[in-house]
Image (cartoon, rainbow, N blue to C red):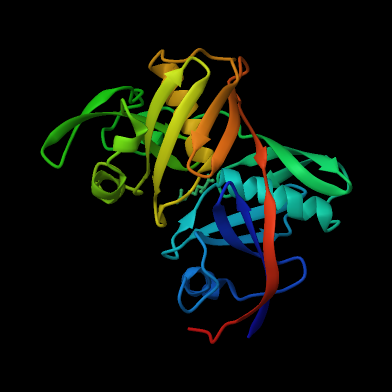
Length: 286
Ligand SMILES: N[C@H](CCC[C@H](N)C(=O)O)C(=O)O
């Protein structure tokens, strides 16, 4: 099977995109295809696979699969790249349009320079804060804000936020000391998170800046995570380290995102989206 793809990235968080408006694949192959395409040695090499697909619910649909073949429910960097692709390939004609994910329907607005999309703004919707909707163990709908969380014999303090996909946010004094490799995989698979979880370590530099590193569910350390950056700003606000409805610059390993949790309770994200390559992937099937 020769599958046409476009590889794109948002601040280095890179995925292999397949345009299902122009190519059909059996849904039973999605997970295995994501694993094979993501493989750095025998595949294209990426943080996962994203499908851009027709939907009656919005102008365009997006599904994200992690490197391990698991399906995520949303993807901020993926949404910006999907918006860029949809506009530049005539799937949408307006600069403002809607994208459906497994979690929700978001509004995208592309800024265009010389017929190319450079920056994309996404209204990522409202954060989900109720414990049982993150989800995190504990049958109540209380918020998880700076809650003691014993892991690897030490007490950490977790703030849990869902942006349609789950995030466990921890504050550190120095981002260079973030225990990504040690605690990331342990927390990702901790039984207190029934659907596993994305793990963020953040250093609040000032009331308008956050340093950020991420261990992603199903993909490990990535250069950037858009939904994670949104969760980080929500977590910092809930812990009164930044104030609501002020734009925050989140410094990720791959670059900066502008995030704002607005008075209407929606979280807005603005950042770049780039095409890396396109071509054919020779898939042997399962
Ligand atoms: N990198 C993505 C998040 C992927 C989330 C995925 N790892 C999961 O929730 O399973 C982003 O830019 O938001």
